[in-house]
Length: 239
Image (tube, rainbow, N blue to C red; front, side):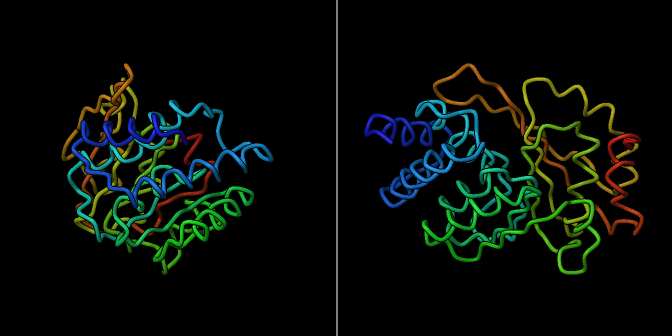
């Protein structure tokens, strides 16, 4: 990653209210190098230009901090993390986070394992699996203060994948785009999954015209054991 892009990342962080130091930048630079190296062998991301990676991956990921729910030492699960977004950039900014990365693609899990080793990250667990199955596992069910998902799926679908991992009084932060009308269509999902929207944060990504939203959802009480349902039901008959 060029010096120009590193300065852009620092300035973008400043605009978002995040102070990035030299050790942060060294990690982001190494992240970019490993991402591009592996991307030549497998499809990790269609975004490869330096400026786009800085804005659409790195700054987009750390913009989750605008939710004001991440202070630096929480236990967090990133659901459907792909190439590590937003989880790894958040871990770079806050090394004391206890991070779990959940990904269904074995190839991407291999990449994440290698990346975690190269970046010398600690307190990072990388899981190869599916949310609708692991949401029932005792080790993971209702064990996280915060769940995050940047996956492209309707909110009522994301809720059933994510909320089972969140402890009562914890939060699910859904990273959504410019349009958020779907929130109004999730009344039944909120009721069934014992959660409610606490805040909606508008985020404009620096150096772009990209507007997105963080839907901050608080879990109010323990979840009925029937959730999450099977993947086919979640997709075909969403709440």
